[in-house]
Length: 511
Ligand code: QV4
Ligand code: CA
Image (cartoon, rainbow, N blue to C red; front, side, top):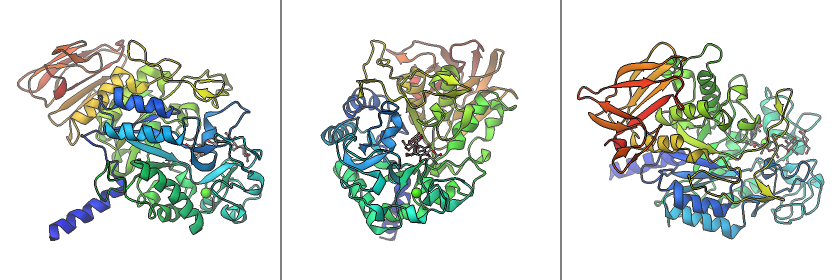
């Protein structure tokens, strides 16, 4: 009996850190701005068959409709009610998406925007994705309802009412982030209203939440509404499953607010991951891949079991939020695939793959003035995700998650799940290799000359298909073949001019 109690306590203490991935999946994908009907299709036709464990969806609540500039992606971060009604679809379409994705073992995580409502400068009226009336001027959001009592106006100490310094922890929490009306989360009414919204989503079947702008809420206030959340829907999840929580906290150091303040609530986004890895892969500031031998906590990243990691996200791929110029994105495709490959092969953190849309960047003084451009659309209606013959996406959807190199590394991570980081090798520069126990091995050449080495892979002998240059199909390799001898050694030759200068092999891609 004592053991059962211990196990149940252990289970509980893992609760909010556990994404509830099923069938051994290890990654989630952010289908940024996708419509609910397209996500349902993608779960069934692509994500489940290729080992993706879940989808982070764009905010599903009703938001302000911004027409100047025309329908920017960021209008969705300006809630005006918690009705499930947005450019991605209606409540019924949202329900259908959750049902179909859950039924094929792909979880849905909702981007919860609960620190604020819309911008203080937005005009009153019914210009909203569901036509609800709202009046920011007098803090009137009747569809929730929220009124003046529910905002932080009186509490903020800056004359502008906005955050003016990130060195002041009170401003960061109690003032408006870029003019967004800041909710009074110390009030039980506000906490309960937020919990009602999230519980509504939990009842539908979602598996957890990204907590937007978590840095702008007191950790204790977040805990207060999380404690009001129900367990997950037992139609899909085991009895007693707690919602998975990952909080958006940008902590690159240098500010009084730190990620660890939020660890009790759940995982935290680790923005240092993409910023530092981008610097290494770009070989800036004297960084080189040989230094990655102690990647993870060794590079002062947060504890792996509290980290949600990514190479880029929807903000910093377009210069918003944090990470700066070192962030690699789909625009830097060759280096980006190496960075995502490294992220997925390395044991650190819970991994999130970004899936974007293309927009017409236009730089003035180094700044993309088109950073606001929203998803591909026909006069505001988000375009369907069309799938080409070669399995890529049309209609300007980038679908990084469908790139062979990335899709195959998501599978690689599943195959090596639980295996130790082993057999590190480097040439003292930018040629490195490492294994995951006896189930996978990866080699990178980011130097300006050929890699030609015999390396200890730790793998059983046999012929392996490189899953970067091709696939294993009908028991043959469509790309490079690698022969591992009985001593575990294999010869690797990687030209620095290769389309993708890295090779990855694993036991499920062995002939
Ligand atoms: C402007 C002025 C304000 C003025 C206000 C009046 O800047 O001074 O008071 O008008 O209304 C958009 C506009 C911004 C505008 C604001 C409010 O860009 O100019 O303010 O709306 O009208 C996204 C975008 C923001 C966008 C916001 C709301 O990045 O540009 O603001 O959505 O539409 C910090 C935080 C971090 C945050 C990151 C961007 O610590 O939490 O900044 N990241 C998350 C999301 C992000 C989102 C928000 C938070 C807000 O990932 O996408 O911001 O929900 O680092
Ligand atoms: Ca706040």
